[in-house]
Image (cartoon, rainbow, N blue to C red; front, side, top):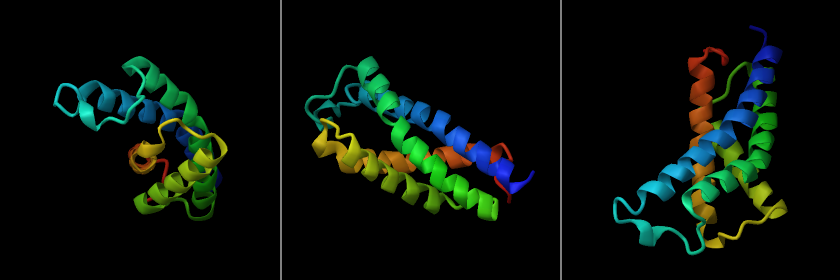
Length: 135
């Protein structure tokens, strides 16, 4: 597979699967926090489960597209990228998105940035297991 095709798939999968994984992760965290007695660790003002997941899905489209563009450039040049590069790009894209589109959960921003990095690593693993990234 040519690197330009790999780059196209990298962009598309980051832009489409990244927000889904982010929404799923927030749904799992918000849903399971009370079960494990960790509800007090959630920031004040967290929306109910469905609304929190949907808000996360919609809001995370911007950082996902920014990550997809940056990582597509890396893929076009080298055919692959590391998990660390994926995480760093996602955290920077998250930071840019927060500056442009602020969230109400100011106290949770560092944790959400960390979650963005984890989601980027998960999407990178999807790309690797689908043999889109070169070995």
